[in-house]
Each structure stands twice: as structure tokens, then as C-alpha cells.
Image (cartoon, rainbow, N blue to C red; front, side):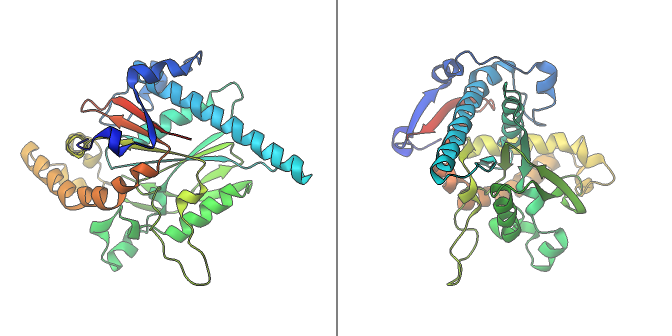
Length: 318
């Protein structure tokens, strides 16, 4: 990043990877190479050392936060003289396209679910709350997909409110990256979880919906108990996006059902030019205007270097 970290993150305690790693304490590693193979993204290979040195300490921290929150609920219930209702702990994970936030979410889910208490950990992506393509086309928003206005924010907030209120069963819509659209009638069930991870581009925003005189503002981020931002320099993210596009050109884009089938036969140079244009005209604009400004709202920032590995961790001071 170009900005001096001391000045930019004055509200944070900054750890190098070497300083962060020992904070795992005696936390055992519950994953093996086969597990990890199922968790990493298309264009990033997360090593076991990365899990041990970065994600295990994070898992331990989150476990301590979850347990502390449970204790707080119990104390409040004792004070009120009523039984403590089961309310899930909600973790928000934000970051740019291609920065690796989905991989981070999957690894965190896997680690938390393997704690001795065996908590039930559900993972939801906000992609399902995008408006269907037909609606986006009608509103001339297809080239703004992923921007705040392309989401059904009211539906997402209602979902978050239902989860946080402790409803035993809540359903979220499903998005297909293959067909690049919401899947009609398809839902994922969130049923009595202990922890819910919500991953998405704009989950830390506070200006995504309008207030009225009759109703106060309510934001997706209001429902989070802990928030994580996956960070990297824009130049690195741009490079990762282009490399991922090239990988998809040789894999998913070749599927006849793929929305991007037209890109499968591009030459390498044509693919690089196309990916660069998409990044410069859409993703970079969204990153600068809507995603990156929310970084300092996160309680923890994972800062990656050019090799797609976390180099520093910034934890907000209490």
C-alpha cells in the first residue's frame, strides 16, 4: 500500500506475520493438505504454513470473541431473569474482487467448525442478493454489477435481521458464477447456526440504503459482531484478476452454459486486454469508490503482498 501504515492504521495494532504467528498459542492444526485443497481459490494456493501462521491465530481470536459474547448474553439474561436465547455470532468478511476473501471465508469456516465445542458454522455470500440479470438489464446496471445499487439491500437486511434475531431457519438466495445470475427458486438454508460468516464486496458499507423520516438507517454491517477486510495493493489485485481470468478462460468459460463462453476462444493477448478493460472500467472503479473506503471500518485487516500471502495483520485497538 502506498499510504504510511502508521498513519493509516493509527487505530490498529500492526503485526508482522512473524509476530502474529505465535498468537496461535497451543491451538492444534485441524486441517490437512487434502482439506486445504478443497478450500483455496482458483488463482491462489494457500500453504499449510499460511494456515498455521495466519489463520490459526485468527481462529483462536475469533473463538475467544465468540465465547466472550456468549458470556455477555448469559450475564444479561441473568440480570433480566430470563433464559438466554440462542443468537448466532456473525462475522463479516469484505474486500475486492480477486483479493481472496472467499478463500479466507472458507478457511475461517473450516477452522472454527473444528474447535472442540464443534460449533455449527454457516457461510453465506452476498452474491445471492444481487438483483437478477433481467432486473439489472432493465435498470441498465449490468456494467454496475457488484456496485451497491446492484444489490437487493432490503432483502439482504431482512435476511440479516432474521438470522440475528435467532430464527431457527432462514433461507438465502443462491448465485451461480457459471451462468452469472441468481438461480430462480434456489436457496441455501441457515438452520440454527452458532456462527454465520457473511462474505461480500460491500458488506462494510454504511451508505448502501436510504433512510426515511419514518425509519432510521439500518445497514448490513450493523448486524456483525466481528469484521475482517482482506487487503492488498490495487496493482497486485489487478494482476491477480487478470491471471484468474486467464485460468477461467481455460476452464469454466469453456462450459457451454457459461455466461462468459464468448471469452473461451480469445488468444492470450486478447484475454489479457479484455480482462484489463473489465478491471479498469468496472472493478477498479468499484474498489476505489465503494470497497476500499470501508477498510478502516473492519476490526481486523489481513494485508497481502504480491505473492498472494498475508504479510501483516492489523487488529483494531479496543
